[in-house]
Image (cartoon, rainbow, N blue to C red; front, side):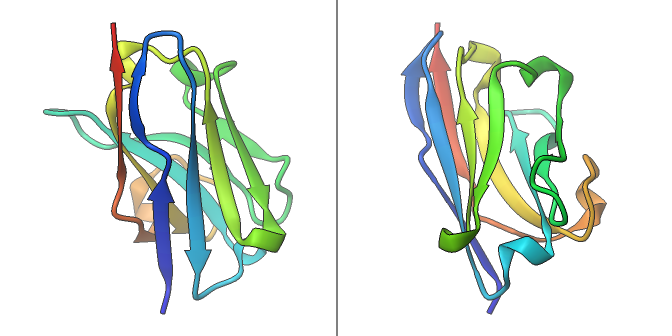
Amino acid sequence: EVQLVESGGGLVQSGGSLRLSCAISGFTRDDYTIGWFRQAPGKEREGVSCISNTDSSVTWYKDSVKGRFTSSSDSAKNTVYLQMNSLKPEDTAVYYCARGSRPSSREGEYDYWGQGTQVTVSS
């Protein structure tokens, strides 16, 4: 059974850091792209970052998180991470990881999703 389970969310002050984890089971991380998305209250879900399957150094970041967020992968643990630094109140959202066949910011390119983890940044 394909599963993605996010963890690491929480409440942090503006300027703080969090590291989200996406634990993968039922498939091999190196065979798929893993994307990170987020959804703030009253807003549509949006792509944040993704890390490719063929070359983990090939990643994409939403402009507003460039230089602050970093995606990484530990294939031995079948886990993908999203390190989030210099967090801002506007980063507050539920964060999801998802499995895709190729690097993309589009939701439609991803077929399996985790349940999400809440990130709240206080000002």
